[in-house]
Length: 148
Image (cartoon, rainbow, N blue to C red; front, side, top):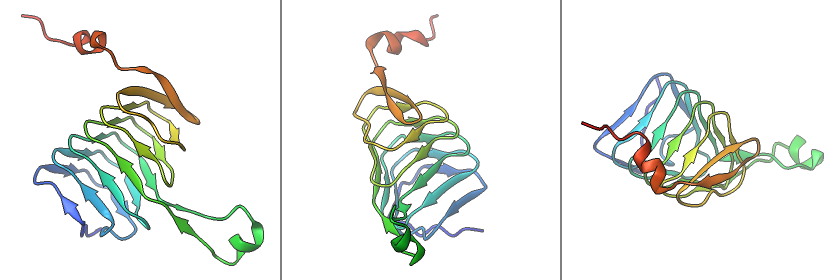
């Protein structure tokens, strides 16, 4: 069982097993956080999740990387860059977020994406590599409204 000793932990959160992390103490979780099964957080550097973040199954947040130069890599050198996830973010199933990435507030990341660059606020982004597809609009707000 992984013990989570975080820098910050919201009062309302759910993390479904299995869950894996390197250290736990480099993870910050805001209010109303939800991580579905199979979440991996390699927290060699700080990983920050804002409020109202929803993570679908089998997602990975990987702060660690290795040099491209073979001699440096073979010496066991490793780096870690922080990852920041804003407020009100939905991350689809099977997403991988790479070192140094920031995902802005109110963003949606499509399933299967490999996020290797920053994603701005208020967009739908997807793909490998992940790229902005479009802005989230007022029309999106109306799409799933329950009408009585």
